[in-house]
Amino acid sequence: MEIRPVRREEAASLRELRLRALGDAPHAYSASLESEERLPLSYWEDWATSKDKVMLVAPGARGRGLARRLLEARADWARQLGAVRLELAVAEHNEAAKALYRGLGFVPTGERRSMASDPTRAGIFMTRPL
Image (cartoon, rainbow, N blue to C red; front, side, top):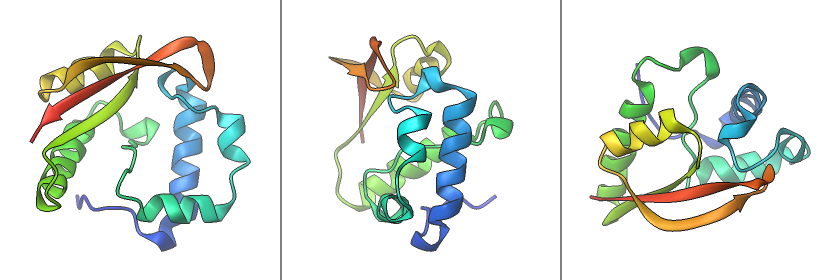
């Protein structure tokens, strides 16, 4: 399997994957399915070329070690760009994701924010030195 950044011309596929992920596990994301369904294709084209990409694994492909491989690839890419750390946000009660990130060396920063998808829930920020 090839791991690489999303290309601009793959924006429609990126959108479809993100919407499936939001529909499958809305509690795991800060955005809501309804808000992201309204975003124009140009948003996804810009997102595909952004340096601040969000990691996505298709719902049917979860539990196979892909997230670990994606994060390690992201770390390698960030090092090549001169980054000194990775930062991410995760839903506070998403224990599986937090365990994955801790296993990859991420630690909580102490920063928390209300999630746009559900303001009664919080996202926590984690960081890992490179």
